[in-house]
Amino acid sequence: MSAHRLVIPLFSAGLGIAALLLIGGCNATPSPVAETGEKHTSESVEVPKTPALSAASEARETEAEPRERQVQRREWSYAGFDGEAIFTENYEIYTTARREDFVDHLPIFFEAALDHYTTFFGELPRPNQPLATYLFQDRRQWQVKTQELLPNQANIFNTLGRGGFATRGVAVLYYIDHPRSRSSRDTYAIAAHEGWHQYTQSTFRQSLPIWLEEGIATYMEGFRLRPDGTVQFRPWANNERRMALYEAVRTDRLIPLAELLHRSPQDFLERGKNRLLIYYAQVWALTRFMMEYGEGRYQEPLQEVLQDAAHGRLGQRLRNSTVISRGNRRGSATLMRNGPWVLLEYFNRDLEAFEDAYFSYIRTITSRGRR
Image (cartoon, rainbow, N blue to C red; front, side, top):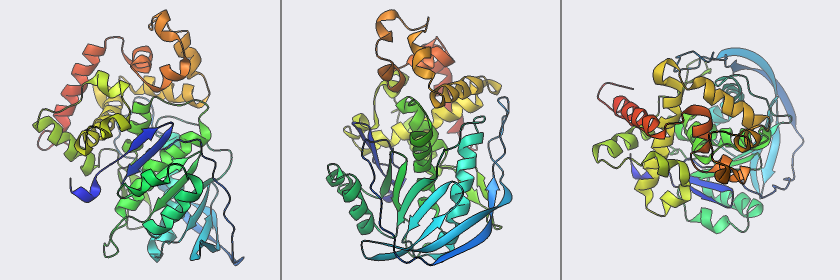
């Protein structure tokens, strides 16, 4: 993986930060941005609708079927930078990005991503109100917004590479692809990753374990844009995660499962960027493993965890668990966020057997000719 594509996240006090792909979840409350220029336009665009997958499905890709949705656009500016506000059924997108084809495609991509989030693992609740996303042309503009929303953490962001964040259901991103690039792939990837955090922050009643929240976010990064403008989500199509995983296997540096479940991205960042890259590659592989192993053996438990977190049942399930010892059942918030408890309760009571199968799966998908 080239240096400019490093993932450099931080997870402290509920705030997720990353260079290239960031983890969200913070207590900061975004303040409204004054809008200027009340020039309104509206148009109908073809927005892909992602079909649901059954629990037993082994599909690796999500095909998008177009459907019409109303999109409204108007002039908008922030901190002296001219841009555009784009309103869809489920998103409010505020952008100063200048690449016209990219901006035109944003409502299609975001709506397709939300359909993907809410159907791929079974039917999940949709947001009750539109999700606000700020996507700036460059890092300087993004830093101004970061200082506004997170004044106490802004200095941390300034030391990181390319990235973005999500906080209380608001995503703050910027255009990270090279100006001369023919593709906006990296920016779309961070939007898909952060979009998952944005979705769970705004919709789920309880938090997922960090390892699963981050695993699914990386799982959302893989996609393909078709010539007709539709989006095809391909969770396995993630060369950055695959290469980091391959290097970890080649150099015998895979992180043990217990450490993966107990530690946060910040813990791995403190050990160096390479260790952090391995962490993200492994939680991506862990989500893939849960979806693909044993003809879908873990798909139903994964769907059950997501449903319980979305509807506020996860904490009670862990507190009432007969698998977790009484002493370890204290503090449902800790049980939900860190450690092996969700895995033990929902997936497999034999962690050693689970780890053996997981590591075997990693070696399979990193072998030559396997995707």
